Length: 310
Length: 301
Image 1 (cartoon, each protein chain N blue to C red):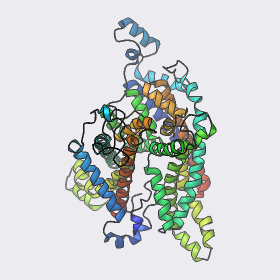
Image 2: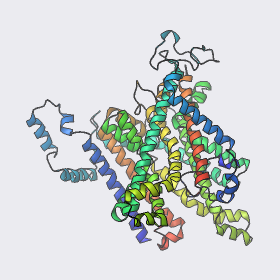
Image 3: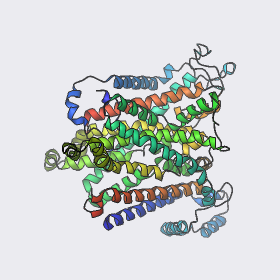
Image 4: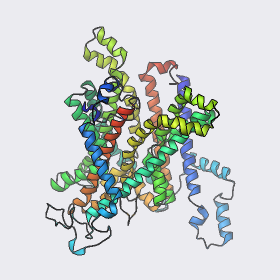
């Protein structure tokens, strides 16, 4: 188990390292910062002074290390739009995003997992086909189409719910539904295939053959084993809580991180984009790490450490 | 067995395990109805994409200010504008046809780039093993664990937008799946007699991989590309919807939905026509992909 954990920890660190490197490389490739910020007609002495002041005259590896140092100290730059620290700007949007992504995640789990299990247990029946048709519809319909159709029906035609903004709590209903229904489809398909895989295993046949009631076979033999791949995908969904609503927030003018990201990209506000990128990757990596820890709890084989290299 | 018509999940390791037993019986059966319908839709889309310039009744920027926001035929519109017009009197059908061409073209190029890139990296990993393989595996893990949309948005923010860059960026989507598959299959193929035999005969590695290994694993790679195609369509339309993908005056399906959104109450047809097209196309391609997978390679997860 310690070996397994050490491996996973080093992989998580490596991922963060890769993201920071990615940001650094992309930032440097996108143009000479001195020329971007100062006009090309600026006197060469001024450009040289600027380069010296920002450490741009140093060799590239020194700049790279400094960049790491700054990020480690939480210095993620200043928004070019309103001059405030990018981190503060992003942080104040996080609660709004979580307000729709957390209920949406619960909706996904509440709809998707039971639907997938039911479909797998009643494989090739009408129920299975209807559930899976719904699941396929759930993820082939892009979120902006689903969102706009919901607006058209519930806000424009029926007038029950607001079409956007965040003034009332009812404003959150449509974004949550849009996010939740699409994700539920993905989760249902995943759960179904995980269940089918498990139900085909010899130990299920053995358990049935020795006379264990089917209900208990499902509960004690099938579900725990099917949980492992399902946890992976749920972990991915948890990791994308902060930035998984980019499109949906734009559809409903919801003032969250995703909306900020789209605006920042459109204005090329690099500090904000970079800050969100790092934040998202940190969340993602943490979620993956938690999933790995859960594996240890769910799958005793991993605790012994023999199955770590699958 | 209409189970074939219903897509089974692509990411999991499970799909098709139970199907394998009944596969020989199904293999003889003709195309399931749903798949035939999907194939028909795809053919229609291809015809539209290739013949866009002959099929579109008007230019995409041709204005008809006297016929603004005209509803489609059957909803009070005229026969001259089958799907109605937008706020500037531009013909929605014409714009739809051109959008289909651009969206499909982008998705097709991107799928091709991803497949070539992924297969190359997979082969490199399988051939050299050791450090190179570890590096490729690390990149695969990294790509698989990051939300692609965020990475794509970051690149667009840093570099600005151009069509070439946008297509290349979309071409990074899904390469890690192709790489994983290509690596696994190439390792397996290397252990088989035929690859060793041609190598003994003095064939260069390039020849072994391109002329001998690739044809043997192509069907699996094609299926995997078919499965990632609809995802790229969705990604492209999502980014274009946000105004960060295909830029005006060019038009794409997501782009049309994006500006149609402002006329949601007065002229919902501007948005519904491209939305329906996106949904039907992604649905059709993923149905076809799932069917192909079950037929050609039930082991592919």
